[in-house]
Each structure stands twice: as structure tokens, then as C-alpha cells.
Length: 94
Image 1 (cartoon, rainbow, N blue to C red):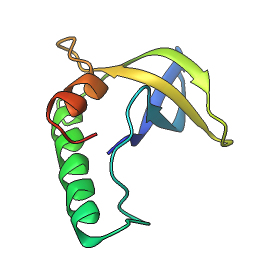
Image 2 (cartoon, rainbow, N blue to C red):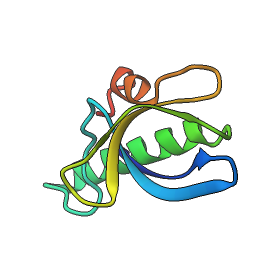
Image 3 (tube, one colour):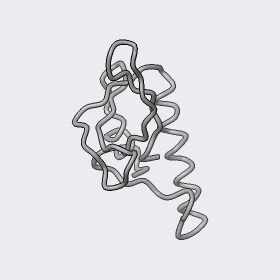
């Protein structure tokens, strides 16, 4: 729920696939949960984010490198200006 894979257009005709960790949020873990309830909440967070991002192109803001290679930390906004991380927090899923 707090990390998504995007195909980012970095320049005209140039795109890169990158994992983006949502800035300022920490959602429950799917792959190493502490308990079954955490896994269920993680799946709910994932579905929530997928539904938000299903609208099409998004914009990344405040992009910084993550401590893990191959990933960045950023804010993601939907085309209508909704902040995905803030919405996840507001929904009680992070």
C-alpha cells in the first residue's frame, strides 16, 4: 500500500519503471506481517491505492532517493490533485 511501481516519463520519449515509496506514510506489510490482521489491512491498503491510481496518469512530487537502491520516495497526486499518501492516512490504512 505504501510502495507502487510506476512507469515515469522523465523526458519526451523516455520512460523508466521505478518503485515509488509514498512519502510520509507507512502501511501494514503484506509480505512480512506480524499477524493475519496486519496482512488483511495491508491488502485493504493495496486495493485502496490501486483504485486511486486506476484513473490513469499521476504526478510525482518532492522526489528523493530511498535508502534502498532502485526506489525513490515521493508524493503522488492523481490527475484531480488528490494526494495518495494523505488519502491513505485519512482512510486509516497507513
